[in-house]
Image (tube, rainbow, N blue to C red; front, side, top):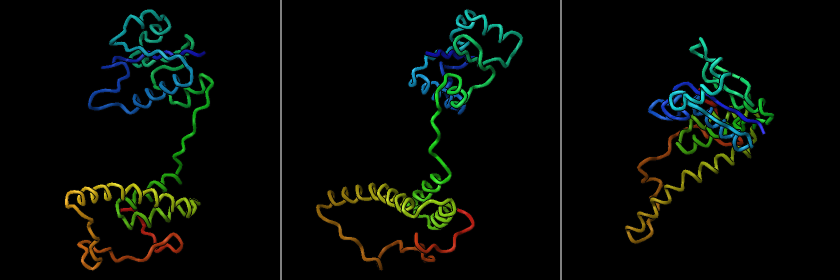
Length: 206
């Protein structure tokens, strides 16, 4: 089993993920180290401000720091330096220990499906047209777009139904829907849009 040791520069805590302004690189690196542990890699991490004796005990680390202000962090794999002065990415860490880093599922097409769902949830007609057009050009199927719309509709309606149930509980009876002509917020007039026959797509999302 591989052993990864990280010697950090002085930080306020063991991972540096604290305080009002957290460095995103430290958040990512902490997550990547947890991922290594979950995959059977032994991981040790030392903070110079809290554990200076650990630095002194590793002559290879003290030698790397000698005469350099930017040597930390130092990363050791089985006692040998593999990186210094920067926090490695998950892909790099995975390659060092012989693991296959999982590929991200968040593709450009997935991003457009998320945006379509967000457009439904926020009642943004220009947004829907814009992201529908982008998804179509990326080859996203109408079926997948319909799934995104259905999911957004379900998420959107859940709190609305919950507050309506609360109102009916307090009022002691079923509340009938208001007539469309008396609605306080009539729908916007806009060109018809459907997954089968899209209207003109705007130049950008609002």
